[in-house]
Length: 370
Image 1 (cartoon, helix red, strand yellow):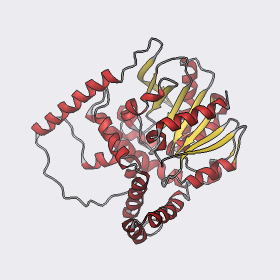
Image 2: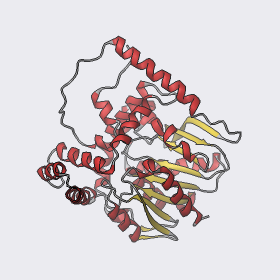
Image 3: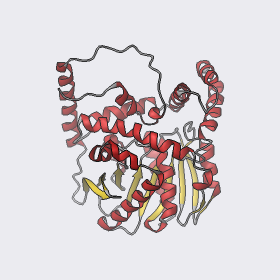
Image 4: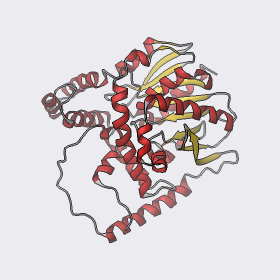
């Protein structure tokens, strides 16, 4: 019998939805038969074959590499895709923690590849990196270790791709990692760009809660007001509070459809197996267990201060996960050769849901540092 996604693993694939315990509200259906699983797996295999063909890089000077690199003493999964090797290189730092973009990024970043070479990395404890090294490798996950991994990877990319410097782009948790890596080794990066930027880890949930309640009242969403007031502001005594806050964040940002699509794309990712998708889900749970307490304890001053390279943030105008107001305060507090803060329509996932506008803003900020 081929492996199947459990309820826990499926929920874990929804990124930040997996950060807190959940309360089951849906009666469990009978488990599927082996024939049903086999039929479903064949459907996934058909989708993988089709996507392998449709998303292939065929440009004569293109690059399409997917491999394990030895980083920080372990094998870590990296993909490098672009239609022109001469284009600037973006190292994308995924969020979560542990929410690797590789399982769905073949489709999510397709429009980026004409202009940039995009490097996606399953961080230590995440995705295929977790699958390769086993669950025990999650014990080595720490903020300090991931910063070292990031710098080591960027240095290797400079050599292999023959680039003087790399553009560092961090989303959500990746914006924390990116800010710290940019401060630690600025000479390997052209600039740091944050999106879904974490401005003050200790205050994010509190500020987001107040913004959610204000939004719910402004649009007359009485159910949201009632549920948010029932759980009250964080910190919460159990997982229900985080579940309620996250659900309404996603609904007000219009992100629920996008988050669901991530799993669908992952199940049909070129070269992927059901085991890879399970590792993706497990990585989010294990990485969150290790990194959320560490990142939540970071003072805002750990992310701000002096940067020896340009710093920009392109944020969703209504981000109820990593509040836009705190992202703006982050930029205001940064001392950098150049810096800037821009907003685009959308919320926490605006970089993916409003991609065309994000790419326009990205090109504009990069012109300032050429």
